[in-house]
Image: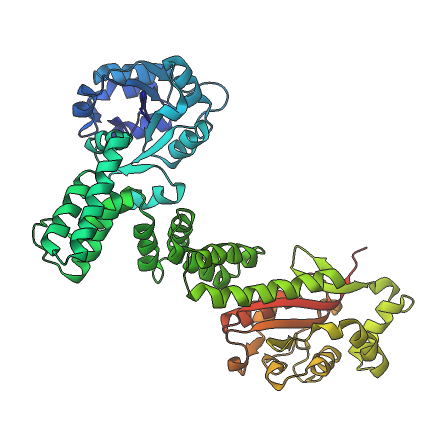
Length: 498
């Protein structure tokens, strides 16, 4: 596809205006004009623009029109269209870019937009432009990756290569060189293999760049290669090669979990099966989203279709959990905000008249008939792979409670008994009698024992009554901290607010 227009952001993309940033931030435009001598064109911009006349040139900026016009004139930067700040929707909305395309009389899909900020990528993609990020260091490259631009550049010579790659014959040539290299490898002609990889990489072939990085990991000195592993690795990242971005996530997983998740997610979206698998695992271990199971399932399914064997076992485990919770959803009510299943509402103001509420109170007193009443409603819950735990009493001395008795009666397999895993170490005032309903007050008085019972397991956490959900959330946190795979929460009753 031929590119007809190249559109640029202005500040920090065409011109480095960092020295006058304070004036800009305070909208002191006259001071900006007087200090234009402290600004300079980004390296390689001038050389690129001297050879850019086959393409129409546009500038889209959120700075005011007068400021932008004067700055472009000061640095003698040619352009065919300037769209500056306007009343209405500016970047990251696509409106300005669409106005620029209209003024240049070009199709957005045949145009590229280059900017130094993530809002530039968002606006370009929303407008249908090809989005390119300009970065001056590795930290800025990393910042762009989750927004998935077409390319990240560190100098403007790389734009010309990107423009060449829009030509089908150029693409075919790159692929042919790589395939010739693979054939040479099969013939065990390593020097010829590397020669073809180098030729393809000079044309911008991302897989060749990544392959050279991997080869240099195994052998730091390869014939014909005079660049480092880091060079080829980062060049493949800049071209958004999925496996390279996956490795970036893998290397960050121990030191920066949030970055790792972002890189895994990006590589997963770009089709890397290993990233799809690792992103799923991190979503499951984060326990910070009510949608973690279906998200993990989605990506594991894709990894499995791609043939990644280790995804199948995890996929089967999630399928069972999702099927189990679906069956609960068919039989019980669901508190979506706290992710708690419950049988019915507990009415504290009608606790002596309402039959269900009366049975809740009787369960607290270990009444056999009340326990039998609830057993009839929840016998479908038990599964062999499930471990049953319960929320301990506020009184550390009270070891046997109605809900613990129900959990124990539900048990059909000894390995499912987790009723001794959560232990109250210090008595706290009951929430119903005025005690604080905060998770921290539970976390500081609860511990997990016998953690081997819960590591890697699907836990059913039970309680008699939930009001704010704080006790169950605190227990859930502890169970996850000690290795639980997933926690499903079930209360007999949920307090009905007045």
